[in-house]
Image 1 (cartoon, rainbow, N blue to C red):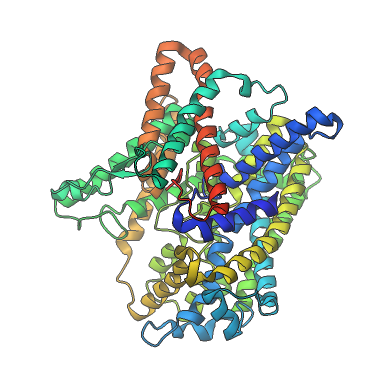
Image 2: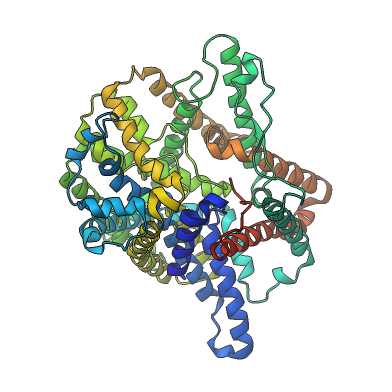
Length: 623
């Protein structure tokens, strides 16, 4: 199933992409893996009727699903789809005019194929894969990705007790898979589920028909800008302003606590009002990007770092007990039922980090700088994983002031081109776009194991095996598609362009050193302090309706797109609880699970059909 879903991702996103597709690895519940789960459930139901003894138990089905979610995301953006174009872009696009030729001498020979023909064929297509040219770089980057993903598995093990057992975070993205795999099939027999399913599925079906038959009406639920008429300086500074009605986002939002959904959309608008007021008072250029007062993206970076810092501080007692259990005779905790023993997790995390640092040192990146890159990247990723566990946010974006840009701002143009070149190859890890990172799905897996009473050690071994299998398989399958289609031929061009853009950015830093970023870094501190204060207020005022998660998410691309679904989910849940109480809220849950199921089945089904029907256009369920 991992291999099949990886192949599906490549076909959908690299080949079908220009005709539209529902991204199969980018949503909080990965669409490709979820489609694989539905296929496994359908096949298992048939086997249960014909050969009951051969049918998979619930735990076995969930382990298959976990292997798909944790491993197949590696095939898409942030993984293979970003890494491969970055490996080849400097060699293919370098000219004296764009100055990309400046970075080529600093790229180690084992980072990318050295054969000019292998590189040219990648972009032109209609050629066999030159496996010999890819052997060394493929092996090198497989080791790198295995080390990074192994590090996140060990970190997830160490976070599990605090987040799952002690803080009891909600993990909304595990609810539907757990309900679908229940042995009694209660959810599928609930007519309320099918009401929500019908709404979402029919919306998707009509919009897919409209994409191919314009006579069919358009019922767009994706992002629709409403800021075209904004003319005043105040209103223009609030851009972008749009609305959307994604069914699956409304479904997930209904499962969240009211303070989380309220805080997410409320802080978004507080940020927009800050930008508008600043522009009106003449303190800002029109716009809300990086480096513009009131520095919303920089505030978001501080908020992400503060979430991780406070999470670790809040868990300090648990961390101390885990260290004692791992390395002393005093064992305050029983780790026999953990996914890995604490000793294994601590030593495994340290070993994986050493491999990553050795990899970067061998490539020519200063070890201290590499350590800072990984520390910041992991800090932001831990915060993003916690946000996913509390909000199930549709697309895991961080603030655009990501670890890479934080380092550039802090060093203020003092880094050499060698360091910047190697940092460019690490960009998929230090990026604000974390939609295809595996770590959030690893925590989801441990939560599902806890609820479904699956032995945690089996789940951790399954995840590790799936990751070790997926990386080389996804790489080979992707190369087959690229060499057949041509990265600058029939293949979807966005990923190809990203490989070039990363190097254009670092060359720009060298040729045009940035101005002082003291104000930007100062507002990173503002965001950090504001998040800590919000957290302290919530700890002392139990009924405080404002959540620091909402402040952290407010400046991300995610909230700009989904504030309206979160507002609707908050409004519907508030009214339901006020009118009918908790009993009415629970009765309505299947309807909102149906919204997720219908939206996902339509998106996955249409994308699968488009892989076999070359003229079919797709209306994506996401952007």
